[in-house]
Image 1: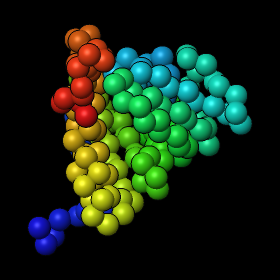
Image 2: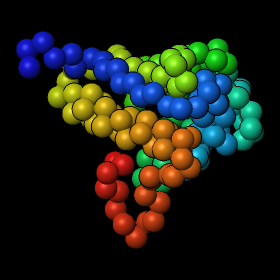
Image 3: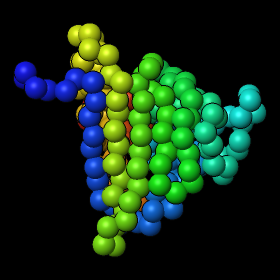
Length: 163
């Protein structure tokens, strides 16, 4: 694993949905809750933008997942309303989500970078986040192509695959 890059990764998925719909799936609380989060709040100077509002650069966020007690707080770094949505994540990491059209699909490309190289970060942020984002991008495809949400939401069961 001599040439393995522990500081970043990129994953892509092609989804048969229009680019604006998939951009909104990240930028609007009502949409991101359909496939990724239990609850999402984007706020501008402490004021929530509302479930159908769209996040902008410099907005703060608070994210909560089904079956997990952890809360993720961060900042939207870029939000151009069509091609790029980026945010701080897991401390000082940066996640960039790019949207491009190819044939009759939108390619969603997610890059997580600025991952520290200590052993805990390698395990949790490089390997763990790669697994988590892979699942959630498949769920994004499932929800927007067919309507089926693959997340476990029944708290009688511990998190399995989507953890």
